[in-house]
Length: 295
Image (tube, rainbow, N blue to C red; front, side, top):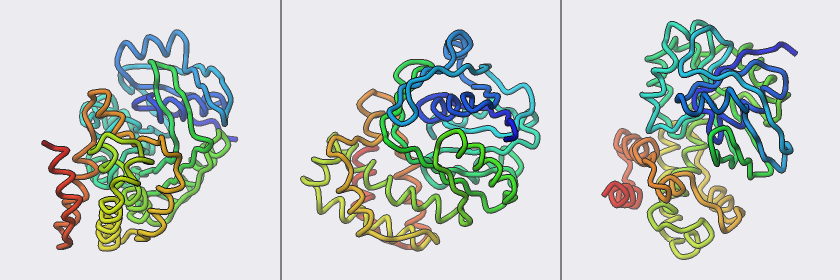
């Protein structure tokens, strides 16, 4: 195994879990965060509580800014704080690093290709339930963690090498050929779930029952936009997946709203409306929910 040096921009639920797993697997991990979090991580590393990977502690380095070259920089902040976070990774310091964003939505790769060399931006999608309960303390709740790596302009060799590093550290990882399809597959599932649960402040079980017609309409509208953008579209499969989830499941947008944090309404709902407008697709239910949430 080649040892990697990996920077983690935003060691929260996703970044903290990945950083801890990579460190445990023998890689050098540098977490980039605010001064308070940096202090905690330097003192006590990252503590993970996980049914899948066990409870463990992982030593990591930490700094407020990237000051040296790394093999990869994982971006695991919310879309709402992306611009501020990017100040921690100056373009010069990134060098030849792969920039791997684990962000919701479909518009961020273009933003990042304006910040770093386009052939080094490798968007990723992760399926996991993982929460930062305190600085450096991560609770991984789902019995799975799955990563899709993609990047239309990135060399396959580099994607495969990173996928191997992830896979050996823990998450089931695959490389997907089509970046647009990978991002829209996530968006098609996430947008209806996030918008409906957040709008009504209900967990998925209650929302999918009480607002079934709206959920179905959201799924069909999102699928139509995805199809127009070159992504997958299978409304029946999406509904079946929602129905299979535990009733108490909440979306991350809903959790943010409940905690008074900014919600990723523009990255998810706004991006969907912009793509719909670009392709001339009517999405009345989506537009209404986005408008109500914005108000």
